[in-house]
Structures are given as structure tokens and as C-alpha cells.
Length: 304
Figure (spheres, rainbow, N blue to C red):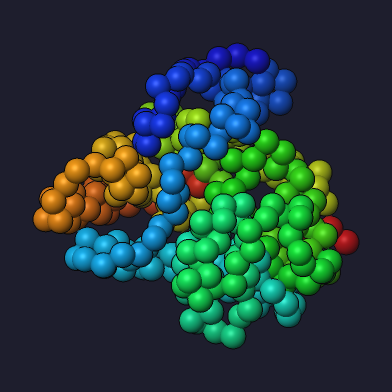
């Protein structure tokens, strides 16, 4: 392997330890080195590592913003469900607070279930009216071929063995069911521009940094064929660029770090962050049009 650079946790500041970002000289897969042990890794995730709606002007603004930008994901999944023609559960792996499934159920008669290995996250989702399971995907208490779709938004890059999750998803999917996966794209222009400051590597929580070719190979080896790709996410690409520019402005990072700020200051910082994300949209649209967007979303189905 060759070392690309070293980096530490710029976003949540859970550690001052530096890690290497390395690339395999043969397959060119980019990953974190050394990978923290599971006992270490859990300390790098702040408590409340998901969105918990609260009250107040800033919270109302943040919730409205999240709902607006999530429409991208909803449309992608709804099209996949229509094209598949399958009936069954939509399982959202890494559901966090459950907002995606909450919105999906509001838009149609879809039976969604969330899954997260964090009990607190599953509890927050359940309180929002989303059925949620606290488990790993390999131990999900669901019958084989019971799911019309399995979604994994920004999950695979956090796993030691992402193939095991894809194998489990394949077992749970109906014959024509759809797998929807989204990961940061290590072949994007933002990575070239920001390097170790790019939000998409998220040291030390992201263990693997995928390019499109890496993801396609992984899907193929796990028995899936890719049907459709999307290189732009309104939720992730502009906001990711804004966070790369100014991690101190990121609303979730400020909340996780317990930054002391008055309600008025919080509102102004949130508005400044939204303005920075909006200013990033033209660049992120251009890189996505060149198939170099900072995220990759894939619709796949089981090979016949």
C-alpha cells in the first residue's frame, strides 16, 4: 500500500489521534490505517449520532431543511419500488432517527422498518412512529425474501466487512427486490480539491473509501447487478462541501461537541451554513454531471 496522507477527526473531535489514509497498490482500494478495534471505534461516535428533533426556531429550520433535501432519496427509492413491482417491507439499514422511513410512509402505503445497531437510535425512530429493530443486519429477525427493498445510506463505509451486509441483504430481498446503496465517492472532485480535509473520508469513522469501480466490484461479488447510478444528492453533496470548507459551522457537529451558543447565535450559524451549502450547489451539480459527484447512489437487484 501507499500512504496518501494522515488525518484526524476534524468534525466531532472525538480524538486527537492521527490515522493514515492508504491506497492498495494492486486494487487501489482506499482505506483507513490502522483500523481501530471495535472497542475503540465506538468511542469515535458521539452520543446522539443521529438527528433528534427538538423545539425552537433553529430546530424547526433544521427539520424543515432535512425534509426538503431528503426528497432526492425518496424519489430514487420510490422509482426503484415501482420498477421492481415487488410487494414487501422496505428495510432501512442504519435508520438513525427514522426520518427517511417516516417521510416514505407519509407519501404512500409503504411498510417500512428501520434497523440500527444503536438502541438509542432505534428508540428515537420508534418514538417517531417508525417500527425499528436494534440489531446487525446479519441478525435481523426478518424472514428470507420478505423485503421489497433494502436501503443503506452511508452505511458500507463504516463496516469492517461490508460484503457480509450485502450477503444478508441478498437473503432478505424478494426475487425482484431492490438494493439501494449510497456511499461517499473517493473519485470525486471534492476529494482532489480538499484532500485530507474532505468531509467524505470522515476519519476515523469511515473505514473504507469507495470509488465507483470498488462498489461495482463489491456488488458483483455479492451476487448483485447494478441497474442505475446517481452521482448527485441534494442532501449530501452541497452540505458535504460546506462542511469541508467550514467544519466548525456544521450544525450536527456543533451539537455533538456541545458548542455553547445562544439560540440567536445558533440560528445565524445554521443560516450561514445553509447559505454556504446553497453556494456549493453549482459546483456539485457540475462534478455530478461529469460522474465525479461526492456521493454515489446505486440501485441493484439480485443476479438471475
